[in-house]
Amino acid sequence: MIHLSWKDRETIKKVKCVHTDAKKYLVHNALTKGEIYDVKNETEEFYYIIDNSGKVGGFYKEYFQDA
Image 1 (cartoon, helix red, strand yellow):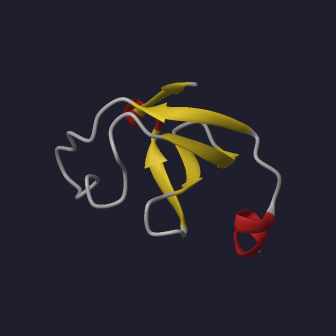
Image 2 (tube, rainbow, N blue to C red):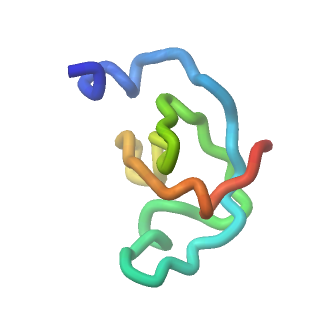
């Protein structure tokens, strides 16, 4: 149950949101283009970051670039 402590974990790296043009999901509510976010966990397909709501959310890597 590692996901319960992600918010308190050390930041792995920082990423910059490059776009919020999602085909399927509402991403613009949780991300802001141009803002830098702390990555708390990473998988092959997703970054788990603290989004604009203050909670950890998983987002496709296509929305980000390394900061």
